[in-house]
Image (cartoon, rainbow, N blue to C red; front, side, top):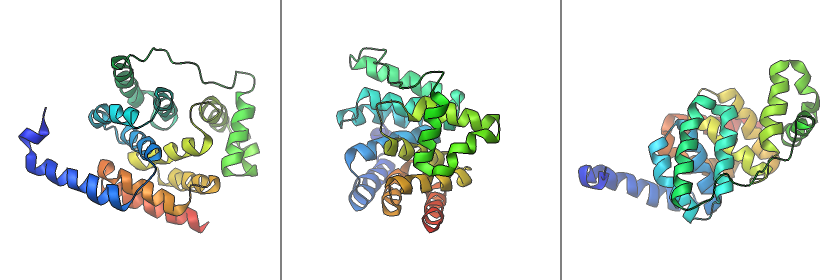
Length: 226
């Protein structure tokens, strides 16, 4: 559907807001902006806008591997049920651009070392106290081995980029403010400082609205105070 034909007044407002106000006042490097927006659309389940924007992010410099890594990592924060439709759309878009699938494997861990490497990644992001956190229970162990061991250690995105997209997943879906504060702090620890995160939220605001964006900024402020 061409919304410029059916809703021209509305689209004029949206276009000015995104391109002029948000785009020019709160600038980010293009790769970071694209990573953040795609992760945000996954988080808020904006699949139709994701379908529209994905080709533009590939044209802007994101590689197929980077895009797939965003989708793969989202499973631990959004769940398989919400991620599979996005994986299907991603595959269709990549195939339409003659990208050969499957892409090269990016894993750096195996069954034997995923817990060890995941715990190491957790400690690098959140501090040395995380080296023992996996012992608190089976879900904590799964978190270290699966979320951080299986995904954060993969090639394709670096640790700062992975922690950034996690922040976007959480901010966009809402209702995860305790975890959002923790991951805002993780971002700050890695060098994605308060001002940077506020620019990220600003870029993503058109896709998730004001309430979740204001909640995210409040979480950033709390993380920066710790």
